[in-house]
Length: 425
Image (tube, rainbow, N blue to C red; front, side, top):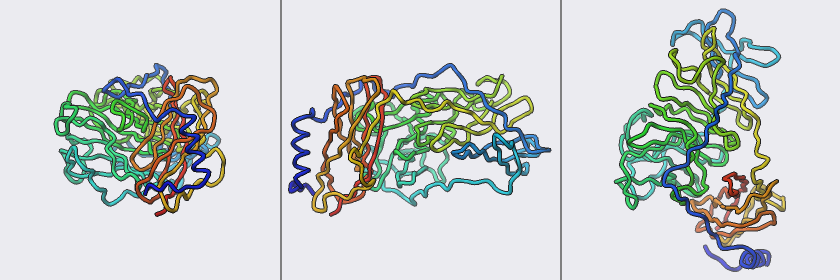
């Protein structure tokens, strides 16, 4: 679909790109393993939301963007205890309600194709999707029984799927079943959650280590073409399959070396990792698990679940610090305004993505990466940012693509913006 008959604007942009910007390049990471996010020693303590009158146990399962909490309250600690629904607000406390809201999860595809080897995957197992139809889950090589058991051992890699890119393995560790790296077998990653940006949270481990919660973006990692895994949790003896990432890239999950006493945590690029605890209860304790994070806001930072308080296991609210990304690069992927969706090039696939980046206190050099939405990326390094610039790409086929522009500074801080592009045949 490479058609060089373009508008005068496109030609001018091509000359601008050729004359003013360095060729697309990107530094190759030195480490073979994902980087481990620095953990903060400061825990966030839970607020006890109580129980409904006459009950002894409760759990919060949903929090709205305005801070209203919903959940269930139980008459006993028995697993089969009947539940009543509650709503909690800071002004009115906990009251019983007839039902609680549940956000509908985006539909999972019935099946997805298996990408070409290496390695030869047995099947693709979708586990989560976002509203744009992007999906994550696992590519299964061994231990592919149905129905899927998250605690089963085996070899699997996390993937990201979109209509434009298809199924893409995002784990660069091929193991003995796929050269060229010749690593140990039984390397495992599973994608359990995907946000509006196509960023993934899940579990990551190998044959010698217990699972660790990861956060993935397309930014360059140990093997550039697979993106970057950041290990945001500590070791777990079981993949609990309950890690989540929201649209501000805040990850919640569990961490702990024993099955009986894991604790909850939260991680965010501007925050690092914080334990989510109840007052006076340590992460590792002799009384069982001190708490569990069950849900968080989509665009905010509040987290809810349950925690261990003096009166028992009660619904908990953790007030995670507000976003603090003022020092991070800011990206505008549509500097001239206009429509969110752009129909471009009715007779060809050559597309220019214009963007602008700013940062309050410059911290170059900068990596600029464009994820074109078709499974490919372009990147380059620049000493400075600010002026409107562009990168160009040739789409091989018609379709609708989410194009995302990342700008990362020398300290690893990054910003991202996106736009939807439709390429017509």
